[in-house]
Length: 131
Image (cartoon, rainbow, N blue to C red; front, side, top):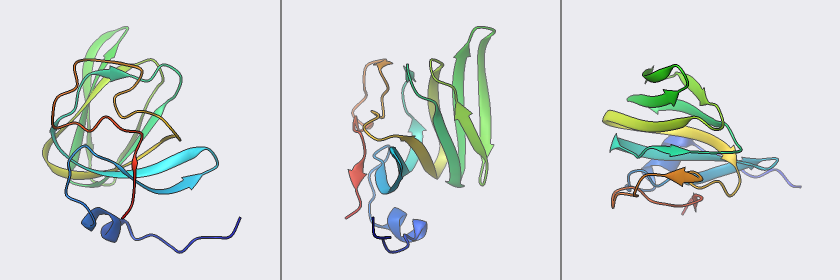
């Protein structure tokens, strides 16, 4: 496979305005590397067979988790990473405009395998190509 040109995350994020609508910036093996602009709440959802990796590029991201020990929230400031383990119900929330990078297997839905009703502001997708 021929190497592609480098991708600027700043330029990738500047190429779209939609919130909670990730763009695929590259792939690694069978994984998509996605960037998204986020603000407000996503929805409670679960990925039954895959972990979900988050890196906060700009702003701050909160992730609510429903675990065996109870419900808790992790706060990720800019530059922080966190992995939600497969099977854990979670709900991302951005109190201020933020940008995130997410790593998931290609074809993984943004709303997981099981989820609450999808609100209008959340794009139910497996990721969009950069334009």
